[in-house]
Image (tube, rainbow, N blue to C red; front, side, top):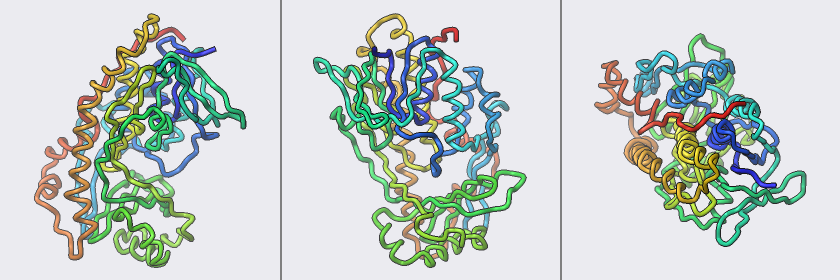
Amino acid sequence: MGVDVLIVGGGPAGMVAGLLFAQAGLSVTVLEKHADFLRDFRGDTVHPSTLRIFSELGLLERLLERPHDKVRGIGVWIGGRHFDLADVSGADPRWNFVAMMPQWEFLDFLAAEAKRYPGFQLLMEAEGLGLVTDGGRVSGVRYRMAGEEKVLEARLVIASDGRRSVLREEAGLAVTDLGAPMDVFWFRVPKQPSRENETTGVAAPGRLLALIDRSTYWQCAYVFPKGSEERVRAAGLDAFRVAVAAAAPMLAERIAAVASWDDVKLLTVRLDRLERWHRPGLLVIGDAAHAMSPVGGIGINVAIQDAVTAANILAGPLREGRGPDPLLGQVEKRRLLPVRLTQALQKAVQDWIISAVLAGEGPLEPPLALRLLNRFALLRRIPGTLVGFGIRPEHVRSPEASR
């Protein structure tokens, strides 16, 4: 027996899509290759655009019952001085903040809500292996579960299996690499809980860090030039800890908690985009369609916009018994401009700011734009709106069936 919609990848895009298509009364199966959602060093930012989507679904209050902190401003430390960059507090009070929520909590919430619909099924430890085709059209997926290879057919397959997507590769969809000048080391450093969330950035000559406040520890992202991972490791762990502490003195007393290189995880940064997001029977969304840079922490929210767009365009026709193929291009067309513009802005920040900081030898001089943002609170609403809502954010327009 097949299903209406088969989604490969239980990340934010896949789980939101699963919830929306199930809400429309369709039979939906999500394949997730891991045994649970408990994976650290993933994006934890739920932006105002996503909070508004959950408000439209009537789920915002329940979502915010999960552990989270509220962040209304974004800033950076330069030369021992803090600069305010962006402010999202001017939005509707229901979503005028970035919710710092562990991704496993967010995904577990989505799974619980989706399971309220009888047509929804989540299969854990089910790894997508490849596509099943019939007459040139994608008609299902081969997957491995409990050591056994299986096949599940579907009217529509959605690939949301990440930036290393197996399905997009097998589908032969070409990728345009936009380039990224850096990679990231993720690690934890203990901290004392604070009354306010202290998530921030730190820029020092030749070094750049993002510090995500997880209450009892910092989730740290150490940014370094692409291709220099081995050089950083070869210099030794002591040198790495010294470099981190020199750039971010707030970590100095507890950086020894990074006891070995096993405590440091590599994130290979990519910025790319499919030239075509679909073929008959298959739609690609999220990181599988467009890998985003960590700049702005917006990757989750851009992926969720894809899921909402897909449901808005496809759920109604699928429920009416119509084939999805003529509509797949509309999903790409609707999302392509926002993705292109967002990636262009990320690339500009990478090339003009991050590359310059990483190459710097002398003291950093805060640019005029940064000084103006720090001085005039009203100006901070501009980048706050851009980061918080993105370009042409979506509203939920997919149909809803009774539970």
